Length: 396
Image (cartoon, rainbow, N blue to C red; front, side, top):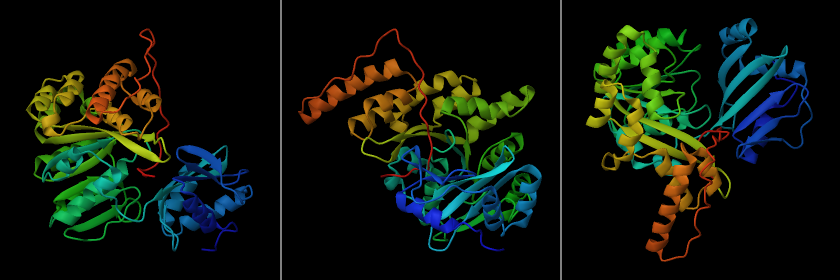
C-alpha cells in the first residue's frame, strides 16, 4: 500500500512529543490534539484534504482488508496502528457529512502498574481473585482499558495462568511473564466478537478479559464463565456500582432477572468505577470508587436494592471499599485536585462540601497547620456538573 501524501507518522510523533492523549484529523482543518483534556491545533501543520484522509484510512487499514471493506460499506473503522519508533494508537475512522475524519488514541508503550496510576488498594486486592466477575466502569475515555491492563499485568507477573483477551481493537500489548497471554483482536484474529465469546471457554483459559459487556450474549457468557470457576474481567459504560448492577440485570428479560440476580450475587467480586479529573498542576488523575462484594452487597443484589449500595460501600472500609466522595476528598486534601473540580464531579455537591470541610479540618489538626475552610455551599443550590472525561490514565 502506497504511503499517504501527508506524513502521518510525523503528525503522530509531534502529538506524542506534545504529550497529547488524542489526535483528530478532519478535512479542512489542521491536526487537532487533546492535551490535558482541551483541544488545540498542532503547530506547524496545514489543513488536511479529503483525498489525503482517504489515503490515511487505506494506509492504516492495509493490514486488515476486511475492515476496509466494512468501512466502505458502513463508514466505520476500528483498528490499531503502530508506526516504527512510536507508541501504539487506537484508531477510529468515520464518515461525517460525506467526508472522512479520524480519531487516534495514544496507548502507552508499557503496561502501567497500580502505583503509577495511583489506584486504591482495593483494585489490587480484586486483581488477586482467582474466580468470579470483576467490572471496571465509567464514561468513555476515563481509562477503563488502562485499569484493566494494569490488572492483567499484575496477574501476568504474579501467577502461572492462561489469560485470553477479546478486544476490538487490541490496545495494550502484554508479553508473557509468569502467565501465557493470548490477545484476540476482532476482525483480525476472530471473525466477530460473538464468535470469539462462543469459543473462549474451549481455549482452557484461567482468566478471560472481555473488552466490553455490550449485550445479553456477552453478559451471559461472562456470568457462565465466572460461575464455572474462571476469573472474568470486563467493562461497562456505567457511572457507579449501583447503576452497573441494574444495567447488567436489565440485559435479560424480566422473567429471568431474579435468577440473574441470584447468579450475579454469587459470582460478582467487585466493581471499580472511575472518573478522570484534571490535576491542579497539569495532567490527569483518576478518582475511583471500589465496591467489593461482601455478604451485605450480595444480599442487596439478591433483594434488588441497588439504591442501598452506596451506603454499603461507605461502610465497607474494612473490605477496602471506597466511595467516589471519599476518593475526591482525598485528592483535594493531597492537593492533586482543586475544590471546585472535585465538587463538580461529586455525586452530591452539597454533601461533598460538608464532608470536605470536615476532612480539611481533621487534616489541619493532624498536620498542625492552619487551613482555609472549604467555600460554603448555598443550601438552595443543587446543580449537576459534568466533567469532560477523556484520555487514558496519564499521570503528569
